[in-house]
Image (cartoon, rainbow, N blue to C red; front, side):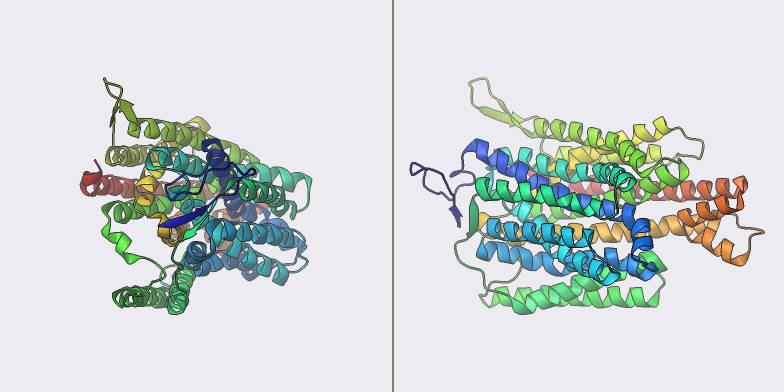
Length: 529
């Protein structure tokens, strides 16, 4: 059971109810969802604008390579540490309250980032930013089972998914404009007004919800899970930077996996003893939660690997600006919106001949399977990209890929969230968010390594001085820099061709993963039709 507390401006307000959305005016539910979606967009923006601002920050704050890495790593590692405890805090103290605190932290940390005067200040501010983001992610999901009944939840999840996707092209577009006209801190200040709007809207529109029985604080579970997720995340980041043969990276990942396994044993022991664990591992007994979470995690793996490769392709191979790169990603958003609308309609019950509610045209199994097959086809087309391929060719497969994402994401998330009770939606949503977060980090690390290895082995650096050759082989940006300094059109062509070859390998890999996920959905979601 869940206690839903609703603030109404008049004394004639209806009493609170345990039914999802039962105590909230329908219009207010959707306005509240828009407010939460705005907060999610802000978090997504932060993931993209930092990379754009790094060259400016390096000059302004005299940051070295290690500092630049920690600007990103501090944020990711804090999210890994805090995401599961954030879900428990929402169940215990109120999801609206935790979301409001998270928004305040995120807004304040954004301002601190903007006006940081040293690398240490910026790293600390990014860590605080991670604390806020770690709660915004799960809280934005946890209120959906409380606000919306199952028949409305598909549309609500589609809105949230659209907000997540929209942040990826908007980040480069808005960030590129700001960096062209203002100082680097402006890319962080854009968060502040959106956070203020979100605070007001969430305060007024979102009902409070929490578990009727306060969850106990599982201190051991918090410590072990945080340490495990930090180790896995940090190890994958280091592997992406230094290669998967790096002993430190492998050792850190190994320690993290051991800690995660220990966490599972600790949680089972607590549950067997009648206690309340940090996460409810029995959720994985649900077919919908187990396979929905796996399919969503693989989607995050593929998406973030794709968003790692495409901006580099557009900017350093096609020669467009960061702003232009964002614009070229917009077709993916268009395709995704069309996919979400189509998938939602296919799953919506149709009216029967006697006016009763009939069956839907397709169930989640069909929509998810179809979506992954569409993604596989799009990535297969993209994998034939060559140095001479036109921009329209890229736009076409990017658009189709977005269509597949739009079909899969809301349907898989709805299957997953449908297994959560309102009682523990906070901790359950945090578990989903944690797996997606790890999936995205691993995706960038694994797929980034594939590109890096393929690129480094194919670029022709014959005749170059050792230092220049090493820089050219280190990354696409490094190769372009060396080619332009030397005025070598041949080297520039080799650099760009080598990267395209690496990107094609990544697209084939992601396409294979998509086919595998389509098979998994077809086989294991049969009970969900």
